[in-house]
Every structure is written in C-alpha cells, then in structure tokens.
Image 1 (cartoon, rainbow, N blue to C red):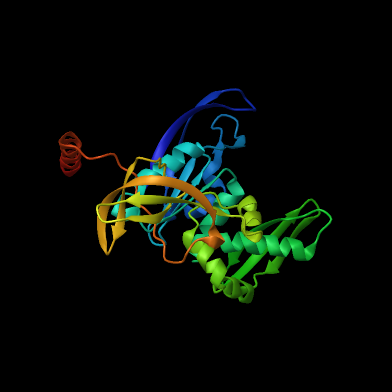
Image 2 (cartoon, rainbow, N blue to C red):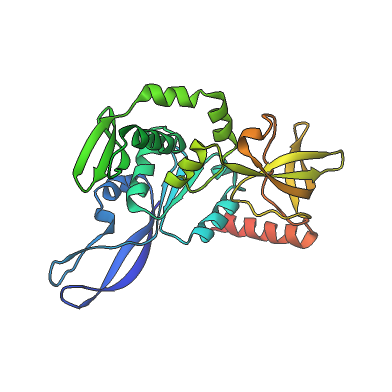
Length: 288
C-alpha cells in the first residue's frame, strides 16, 4: 500500500540539487515514520542538512476503515471521495482532510483507537472553555500505552491532561449528538467544525427525489455534487431504485427527521454507450 513520488529539491545549506523519493500513499506499516516525522524528513547526502518537507500524503487504514489526507488540493480530494464512495470496498470508510501536519498525525491516533474525531474536537473545545487560559492552548489527542491523554501546547510549554472518558461516553449517548453524528458527513473536522457543533449550527443538504412510485425527501452527503434534474440512486421499500432530484434545500441538522436516508452518488442516465465503457473498464481491470 505504498506509492512513491519523485521530487528534485535544492539543499538550503549547500545549494546542491538532489533527487528525493517519498511516499504519497501509505498504510499502517509506515505509521511510525509519520508519528516521528521521518517520512517528511530529508537528509542531504552532500552536507547532511536535514529538511522537513511538506508534501501531500494519504494514509489508508484497512483495519479500522479510514482514510486521512494531508495537504492535497481540497476540492480534488472531495471529488476523489465522491468517486470512492461508489466502490463497495470504501462504502463504510471514514474520510478526513486536513492541511495541518499535527492534525494529520492526531487523526490517525484518534481513528485507530476507535474514537470519533468529531467528539474529540468537541471535547477539546469544552476543555479550552473550562481552562479559560489567557493564551489558549492547542490541544492534541495522544495515547501512551493504555493512557489516553490530551496534550496542551502553548508558548509557555506543554502540559498533559488525562482524557475524560465519562464525558466522552455521555456525549456519545446523547440523543441529539447521536443524531448530528449520524447525519453529518463533513470531510474537514477541526476547531471551526466543533464551534458550529457546539452552537448546533451544522446544516445538511436535503433533496426531494421523484421515483416511479413517489416523491420522498433524502439527505445529500456533503462531498456529493447534486443539482436539480440529476439522477440518483435511493432506497425505496428496501430496493435500490433510480430517481430524479426535483428540489434542493438546506436545513439545520437538529431539525432533520430521524428516518431520512442518504442518496447514493449522483449519476447521469445510463446509456448503452455508458454500459459499454463500464464493461470495457472492468475487462481491463481483470487483465491487470
């Protein structure tokens, strides 16, 4: 599960150009090199100067079913998620995007420990409000052996707080929070997202879909691009059927009825030509 990219870089100390190979997509076998930053560290073979390189990196965990993306173009990643969601292999995966290296490492630690990073961001906000520091800290989740910690970083130094599991369990079982987490499909989960959740200001996109039998309201995932007139797949009476989007609107997530379901990826009307392309693609994959 490793893809390499090649860079030509100039050493900041000796000004010599060097060929640098590094990974663009890795899995758990490269986890430690992410945590200790070595995957982003380059040592010049001429003078020994060490340089921290920031380049896009995708982490895929097939055991805990999540993908975290660092540094790639955001819209490109969102479009990629839209495509991946159509594949059965990735249907139940959690997808996250961040442009922060610290956050990238933290997301991996949170998700591999089966914690919900959305609740963790809410917890960090609650902790920040409780401490009411003159210079607010940056809080990061960490796990050492069996101890779950929140590390507070600010110019005055670093401190560690034990993670309050009781708080987490209470929020996880709160009916309104459960509903919000059920319907939220955000790909960027950070402090800004947590503030919206804290104030219950998270909205979702809804649409009315016309099938052969009826018109019903469905939810649109945040990463899916859907317009009025598009054809989408929905589940109706237990069957997956094709329907057409008739209207679109936004609603506060707290006001969304509990029984709604998501549409599947928007698709154009399939033609014999489309089916031929699909068959050709599948055949090529089989040969590979």
